[in-house]
Length: 166
Image (cartoon, rainbow, N blue to C red; front, side, top):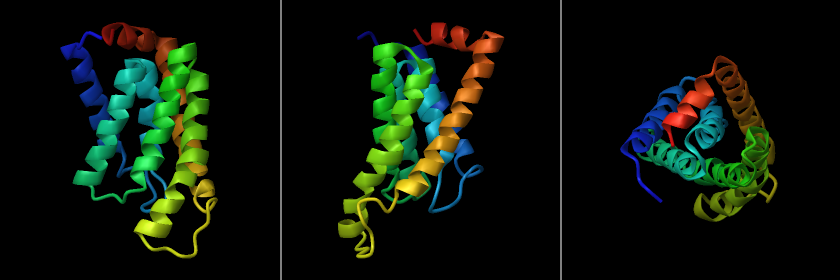
């Protein structure tokens, strides 16, 4: 795989957009829908590998610079990975969105259980405790991403950015 400086810069800029939007559109300790917007739109615009790299960069920035808890890892990266896989296989933004929602809303929420129970010591959690909150957050962020991508496609900006990211 050839590494492109332009693609690296677009990846960093898209992660920075997510970093700026995260504190504006969030419910602290409960939902960060802009992560999911960046996950889906990043995969569609930048491609699967750089889109996932963008999601990883955003997650690390939120952990280190914003002091977010470790739920950002399963909440941000599992869905991004599935979105990247779905988009790589189909080139369909709607299936990438399905991968994001299932990966974050179900799998990410379930992976948060051992983190909460054993690392944070929350004895009252179950395997399904975080599914409602994660689903609401990822559905909202993913819906925003689809709206954004549709407007970008209609204006011709999406294909231009995808071409720039090649």
